[in-house]
Length: 74
Image: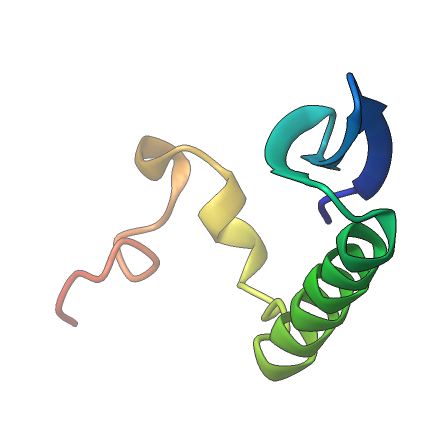
């Protein structure tokens, strides 16, 4: 999950994602609104695309799997 924040940048305001400057704006209020929209967008994306539970054998090297787990024909 990305972390968004607003920080002062010289005489304007910067929108940062995971510590990296992404956008500079004149208005702090608008910068804060953009951060809220980005957070809401990410939350909706996570709800619509949940992480699926994959079979545990996908975590092990291919040579350690059985032929059936590798997709071989019976």
